[in-house]
Length: 487
Image (cartoon, rainbow, N blue to C red; front, side, top):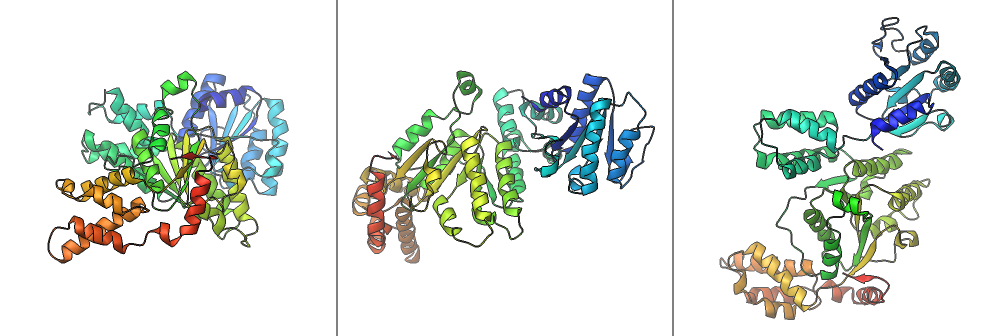
């Protein structure tokens, strides 16, 4: 159900006190005026703390800087045609005992007079004592239809008739408020940005906006240079679900995938997989940094994780990448934090199970030991994959990928068959490091690096498979136990 229908249904269902959480006050007021006119053929009377009531001729500018009097004025109103009062920024006053008591009293009056009070604010939660009286919901960010209206309004001079191109712009603007979309489009026009650069510029703006949110980072999915060697089973699983977030999949009745957990040895491409998936599926990628979520102020950590969840849901379809999720649970265990870590974990785990929006989780872990049992059970993730060290064929591919990146024209002059043979037990990251070390040698001696330089670099590196031999043997034993899939 879209927001307009939800408001209409709420009003005609005799919900007389309504609270709407949003940061888009202007857009909310516009929508409310349209709905109130349709339902009651009446105007909506608005109040704000500085100006008081602004559009009621009977008591214009009254109740300035007095929220309690603003509520009292509703009961004093003699105009029987008045149906709806819209009180802005009212979340600030809800914890005041006099306001709280007045709203409870006012509820009975509104029922008798068949009038409505709509409160707006940015707080997500209502005080416990008011939950019985006030109907609460969040106003979602603009949907595709609203974004398209703005695109057509601003970019009429640019040839945006191609449906596929409009879809791409809509996807880029997902998660923006109407005001931010308008400012962005105005800036694009002012700077005479070409059609080919529009999406890139929008994604840059999205990255800047996301940086203001503690614990969340945005990555652009427009990077065609990314390539992953090996992990064929994982690639096949993802390929089948490539169109899972499209209208066609929805019409077919497909359930949107929840996410995957990648467990395995460090440097084997688990983190890179998140970027590859975003690139292949062409949807936004967010990275969760849990260490930045925890704050010293009581309740702030919970607010941050809820805000991050809200941003991801509003930007759906998208991917949320949680790197080294095993460290999250080990790092904050047994800390004297008054239960903050546990509450944050519970909020996140509950969301993982219950989320319905198109947010695909890609979580990575280097070990399974630190993860709680509840995160491994079915329902949190669609699948758990074990990512092993690359075999001979996969090492061939990894050498080819990295050498093509560093030497796109002469990569085939290196004996990658021999190099793959002598690098048994190396991870993809260690293979890349051996190439970098060989390049340093060639550069120092003022010549091109050779296969011999690569061989020497490989022999000098002690891979993690030797340093942490027992740990990796136990991890591989678990990985091939048949309990999970091999990536």
